[in-house]
Amino acid sequence: MATFEQAIPAEKLREEIIKPTLIALGLYNQAAENLLFGTCAHESHCGKYVRQVGGPALGIYQMEPATYKDLWTNFLKYKLDLASHLLEVCGYRLQDAIPPAEDLVTNVKLSTAMCRIHYLRVKAPLPAADDLAGLANYWKKYYNTALGKGTVKQFIQDYERFNI
Image 1 (tube, rainbow, N blue to C red):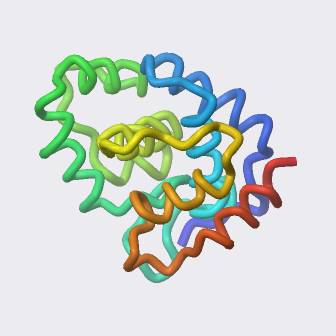
Image 2: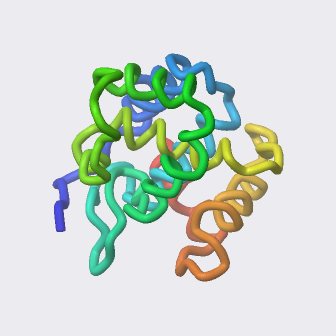
């Protein structure tokens, strides 16, 4: 398990990782920023954990390798412009193979981009940026899922705890 002494400060996470990555991808809006911030706050305590304790999830958004592979195989494969732009934004050469899931641990741009792609694939629109309960429910339904151990209450608590 990879653990760091402290989390990434909220302002740094938003202003140096989430926002610029989403802008570079052309997928930025405030609701997406808040949803990704909340996902990171809950899933890894803002980057304190980059490997799931007792599980397969990787990176600051704790994405499972199977989900990562599925996004490439069943979504990005059919959106080649987005896929090639994502690779470029995340520091990969276009002729390279798809980055291994393990890169989610060390490449925060890739981790952020793939989290946003995961939500982009959902047909339901994002909740309003200021609707924290709506964002939490969206995360639970589409990211953590009904089978996941996380709760809407925990998402809200972690969002508020780290958003200082």
